[in-house]
Image 1 (cartoon, rainbow, N blue to C red):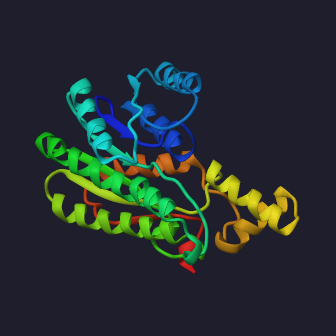
Image 2 (image 1 turned 180 degrees about the horizontal axis):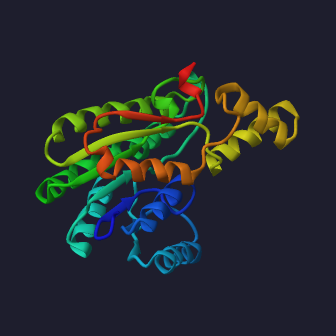
Image 3 (image 1 turned 180 degrees about the vertical axis):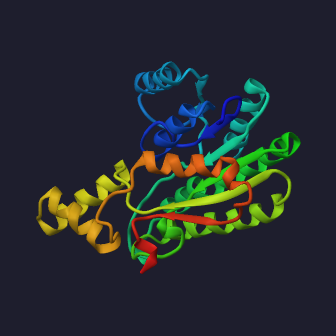
Amino acid sequence: MLKGKVAIVTGSTSGIGLGIAIELARLGADIVLNGLGDAKDIEETRSGIQRDHGVRVIYDNADMSKGDSVRELITATVETFRRVDILVNNAGIQFTAPVDEFPVAKWDAILAINLSAAFHGIAAAVPQMKRQGWGRIINIASAHGLVASPHKVAYVAAKHGVVGLTKVIGLETAGSGVTCNAVCPGWVRTPLVEKQIGDIAAEKHISQEDATKELLAEKQPSLQFVSPAQLGGTVAFLCSPAADQITGTAISVDGGWTAR
């Protein structure tokens, strides 16, 4: 379905981003990976996807906290592949604390990586996508882009901002062949969530298993984690012809979290 297309997935060396990158590669897209990690592990991931799916896969270590670096990622991709068709803005970080104790540096970092990086990437990619007459921008927001939780002021603000950004870009690109949508996952068993499970276990002196059940029961009625592969499938659908008229919207993949 995506043969001949080029997809950039930020924050794709593990977790949600990696699941999305693998699914897009399975469908024939060439992939630009981006993210943090051990250089050897990243190379194994890159070469493995390339080998398994017969597509070209490169890695770019662009720093998502710096706008110029994000824009250079788009420019470098166009220089290498002569096009960019799919931009998945997935990179994100988390920190929790009450608002009156929230470190300013953490606020700035979360807003930069979780929100501003998407703005810079989109601003750089849209002109190329419009020239091609086809493009798909998918912003990985969160259930926290639609509802709030205590102690996550920066994350919730950033993810709400991502949903708003998505709506504006959907309007600005309507009719051009370019669409922009947000995917809002519930709990996914990523390193970020593993840390929250560990914090619950330590705070309440309970097992990791019980802490996991407590985390899910509080928010996610399905009592099951969303998988990276499921999110990859959602992104793939948004890149399909069936989604040509879906733009400017937020799609929840959250086991019923935001239905309450």
